Image (cartoon, rainbow, N blue to C red):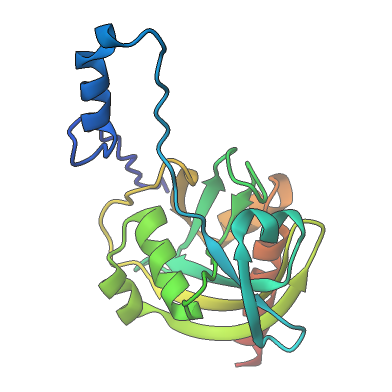
Length: 215
């Protein structure tokens, strides 16, 4: 069954969409008055991640780069997304991701930022990565379980959720997701045996299936 996809490719050159555009225009108008080129760089506010102890108690916050590079123990939210046919959303992570780049995944995932709770992060990631409104995400999220996880790339206290997608086209965040589509569970199992998936996503899927079997 073919998955429906939509990659949004919007280009905006207005000052509203490009906050440094007015400065670029000023520089072009007055370029003949200076003998030295001026390089303007857009700055981005550092993303701070929640840091926890071995009992999942918050002990501070650190910049994302430091958290990933030093494998500090943080929090992450992971969402299994299904459609009205019971199929599971499978996605291909961008090669630009700092963790598990280019891997396939069975969850929409993100690190918990300073000031966020697990549900906040899950709703934000659903909105950013596949275009679900945060209001719809919050209304539809169902918390499953909290779990510790560690591998060579990831050190986290995670929280798993399910979310039932209401239909319509997926609006993908190109910086984060290369491809996404719904697949039957049989197709997912076949992909898991043939493709490279994130270890933490596979672990969550195993825990979810165990929980389902136990009722």
